[in-house]
Image (cartoon, rainbow, N blue to C red):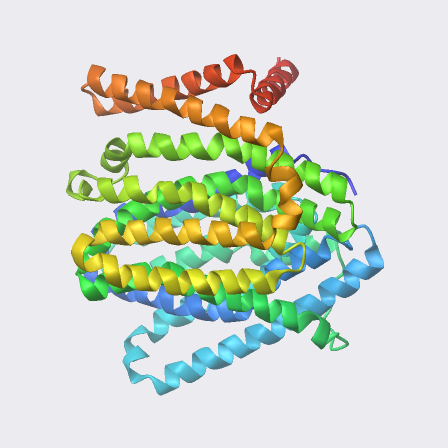
Length: 487
């Protein structure tokens, strides 16, 4: 198999993540003005309700398939057998999810008003399974799914402006949302045959597959509870206004987090493949590059967002959301901890088949986060919710790091890694100075933001170059090579 560039994959996956984030940013301001409040409420409730059944259908299979399948990708016979067994399990879990969904619709009479919208969103359950995106991840092929994602997002936006015209059109909006999210997944399934020959089979080693799948699924459920509990508890203890303010800071935080995590997503199959083949030295080299690259990107991204929180809120939201500035400044620190927690879990623990430790750490953190919310929200409101997230992300980072200490010790405690961290901290001082000067020197919101970002990047890069940071020189050389190839 052709070895694909991690840099190109990171760019393509980052582009896909950006598209997934931009779509609601473009569509929501429009639909919130066109649709009625009741229509928006039915849409959001139905989407959230179906997401739980999507989780059941997924069963943690995608994560497991990437870890295990990466070992077999150079053996056609084994990968065909493995993919068929995993896909068959996924079909069974999908049928179970639909049965549970239909039973719930029959039992709970309060859902009758939402049935039409729920049934439209339920198409996501089937088409997510058919999408088999784990196959593309195993083979590190992000070009196809990124291109089709761009095409379907554009089609969906056009359909939105053409078809959603009046308050009663929330069902059309739901259908367009499904088309945008999973509309092309049937094409994915057909195209996946270029990599593997998938067929339904009942000749499956259930005991071998189910235990790790269910552990990963339990972790996913714990993460869902952990992520959703903040907003739920805030709504219970405070009000819809507090939830709205916190949701704004979380959305901005998630955008930054998703962009930075794009590099991680594309390295997981490579690391799983290397660990599965016991290529420890090469595994350490790739892991070291990942940590080094994110080490000089994550800290300045968090500091930059903290310094420009007010400007970012004004640009993405509006003046009425300014109370979320302090909440955003607090939660921005969680970017650093969450990224490294993810490195330790998805790049180290799961490839090393220590998913039970990931489950334990996630459950402990989820409980801690819920307890902290009940303690901090009464006195700090949405700022307390942000602080609980930061503490929880720091905890899971430490626990995940400790759980894989024997693997990461040769990588983390290298002199180059520690020097890289020190260089990044010094560079961030330059970012703080630049942002303070721009805040003092510009009155225009746009000019202040643009100059702060551009000059911060230049200042940070210049400091790293002056400090002779190896990773900065490597990125600079790569940029020069790309420019030469284009000229």
